[in-house]
Length: 558
Ligand code: C2E
Ligand code: CA
Ligand code: CA
Image (cartoon, rainbow, N blue to C red):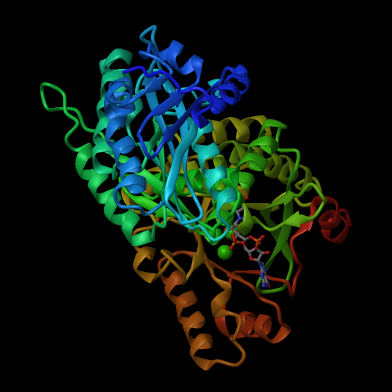
């Protein structure tokens, strides 16, 4: 009920003050006399919310119904902390209110209890601020957006120096499938239901935000990682409650969390880290929560960076890739008989990067397929050129399993053989151990096609990974390349010496040639030549991998 303000009273003086302040338009002011419970409101407060007057006896009777239903519990819990449990003298809360015209909007309400010298509460005064347009609610779920989450986090970090807590971002794993299958409208219904379910799981004082696309977020002051694991399990459970009429809908969520201050103290950084952790959770198979770690993040950034560098390089026609060539010699007399083409990448600062640092990316992203085409073109052209000096010059080219799986690979090679007018018997494809072969029938079928074209096949890195004795009988190859791990200690280790000798014998007995890799010392070469009957040798003793022109100078035109 509206009251008269007694002349000369404090509330009357405050009224003048209110009228001056409210001209900013974005804020509503209130002050409650704690002795009487009488509330004084600014004029715009009364106007915008259609309240009975500027002085009210029972503010909550009018104000509670104006607060959006879903936010009322948070509101009463926050006031309870001030007036009943006395844990704080302050109230700082964001909630939705309904204006006189029926529209809902978010406000930030801040109140503070003013006490006299004895500590007795005198006034409860504060301001309700209309929240910035940018923080506006998401139209589907009604939740505040990313800006709002970022701002709240920033305020929290600035307000209390020693504060700690978690920034959590949730992403729906297969929401785009739901939208594509059931349509956008149904997608919105699901999104709304998911938002509601997650809110039900979160404590009333934790606000859920709707970020871009299918991402949600929340801030959890004082959180510990194990608490976040538990809350995420509840979220996983509530995701299972989202169902369509036929019970066919299936939606899971992944989450990423960053903790302040350990992971960072800047709101933007923390949000970015939580996103990165979410991306990690998705890469690890979805339906799980991942915590940010600097180490994982650095690796993730390196991966993402490398990926885009490789993409750029391919888009520019592989111009930053180069092929180096390492000589292969006849073990009997050391005569040059061919070379292995080895990929290099020239970094922006002109450093030559070794393949183990980037080939895994090319393989993982299947970029090895376009790069593989480029490699074959280059190596074929070089081979053709060098055959002018040495007509039977052999060119060995590394091929990863992914290339073999690509159905255009064989016709492409066939076309290259024709275009470069190469004798296919001078080409050797080395299958690298990029991925262990699971389907030998498929691999051998492919090899059979290359064999019938005339191309020879080598099993690379024999003795490591997949390439071991057991596979020799499965693998339809012409040449076995023995890995350098067996050669490193060959002059010091009798076991290795015997092993290499018997492997060579075994290969010869089944009609395969042997190339020994990693030969660096004269004694090792002599042993392999005199005692082992090796066919081919490749190693630093005869030459390191070199760019084309350097190779040509050393071994070329006589
Ligand atoms: P790989 O096919 O086993 O190639 C032989 C590697 O051993 C080369 O390393 C070569 O520089 C090194 N090497 C040769 N002789 C010696 C020696 O006497 N001592 C020592 N310490 N090392 C020696 P690189 O060029 O770094 O290549 C590493 C791997 O990257 C290759 O191993 C191959 O698996 C892969 N790779 C290189 N080029 C290509 C390519 O064009 N395509 C594909 N798919 N993989 C490639
Ligand atoms: Ca190789
Ligand atoms: Ca090898």
